[in-house]
Image (spheres, rainbow over the protein chains, first blue to last red):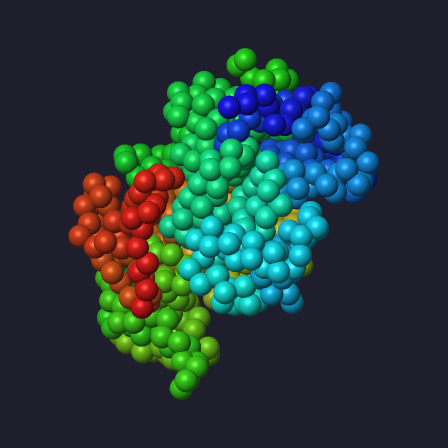
Length: 285
Length: 262
């Protein structure tokens, strides 16, 4: 299999100009994404979502994105024109957001929305689009695809809504999916079932996944590799299976402050933040 | 301290009726923490709201509920309202946006006719680890964790015996969650508080409580000790599935998940 990275990010910066001064949301993040599940974990304000959005050129107005390199499939995403970017969005890199309730169009049936995602990126007929849509609904393990095709978003559950989002994002056959807290609004069993659908599709199709979440345990069990972010910087990078042996004091602190099922603790450790972490970029590396 | 027997809650009437809580019974001793866990829609928050007396205008509540030696009537007594306090999930939605922290904390003290209100406000803030400089700030000027501390301070100001906690840390980052959980544990030790904690997070319940009930579709599936929970010692398939799911992503285990419908 081809081992060259699908996406290269080098020294990414996202800066916002606000009335109270510059806010550096992302400061010098670098990583390569291959055909793998890469997790980005951090607390609120760590810059994990800003990193995902900057890749797709979805940084909010007022934000400035700089990078030494932001390359996907030979395309420099920083200097690409709008037409190229539109082709990349959806067709090359897709994004799944947290809450399907807000990401789906409430006045359009599920089937039509998924078809639209497909037709934008291809010249196939409507009949073909319908066939592909039903096939995709089946692929995300929706039991009655014909019924769901005709349903409106408010008529489906949260878990099904997120499967529909996955179906929609998979339609143009992207090579990378960026999923920003895709299952945080769901109950834990439903969350795992939705992730299983995503997992199977990613590995069957040899795609790359950037999985952004605040949930350390979930990322450690779901992803192959993890970036731990804090204050807009990557504190540490490790194999998911080796998270328990992480060295950086921030990662250790995050792990220690979680209550655990497998052992009682009198008092939870409280994370002591050290300003030094943000001076020496890359932490212990 | 808390005794609930045969609690039923029905929203709406006739064809539209929704039976949210079915025949729930539970008992909590003074100074203990009791957990209610379950997925969304399981009725765990509704039990808490029924106990607090927040449902009387919107639902039909029936069954026996008693707190200490007081049998609860539909109209809660003033003593009950002082003795039982609640902390809500969303620290953003549960504090009045146009009231300062000082006003927010002084209001329950004034309602209950307490003396030395200013002193109580300062003490309550101190108790939750905030200094007096927070008194004249508005909720939007403080962080989520600080807001939840203010919610806890507001609950404490009437010197309650029982605090009902509805997902008190699920909107917070894990490092802030640890601080708030430690705070709640310390307050419980110091004041001998009795807690009822509603959460979907089994690890949080295991950390905080001695006993818990697992709820599903409005009914209690199983009541167990935290030792049993930690040992995965459950006879009920629904509880076992929740326990498996709480361990994280395991592709193999997921295919065995069952739908636990009506």
